[in-house]
Image (cartoon, rainbow, N blue to C red; front, top):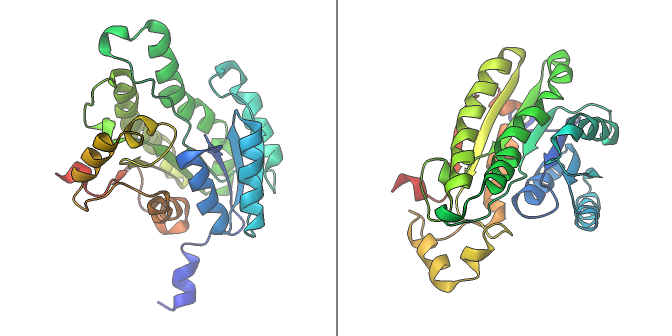
Length: 260
């Protein structure tokens, strides 16, 4: 296959994505990868100052980005928030969704409350489905859609102080399969990325402690913790036409942590 034709499989030119949780960490990094690959990107999160800075960074790098500041945890506002994202997209159409918004309260099991349980499962599990569904009619009409959910090592491993988070992330893997079963016949591919330990706000408790950080690195086959750029290839692959016959899968980008 000629190189130009091969590269076309990975091109995101003319596509528009919305990335939730895009004000920091993995969501912000994934939005940047999509913009660098030619996609228009709508960044969605609560913190407007951080969103504006992320959008400026993408646009300064010759990408095309805009943002919507809103709280997806307010489920009665999801339809309105989705409409704002469509309006912010370059063509008024969203071709793909990256569900990177997440909550990990790290509570001891005896301290998990109904309120913290509901908040965790709402943002990590309910929102990805209900928010993504808002864009499915347009994806069906276009015969193209890509959904990337964020799973976790805790989708298959139990860590201390992670009961609600682990339950939600285990659910993300099954949600990914169920969404794929429902929508892939319309050329909407749904997959999940399960990151290992990456330096983000959610993992500050690990990376701020030398022994915890070193322990996490030792669990990998590669021998180091992740760097955000390690997620670029999986992000672009799952967003692009190259992944058109892959759906319902969870890819662990974890340096071999889950393989040991």
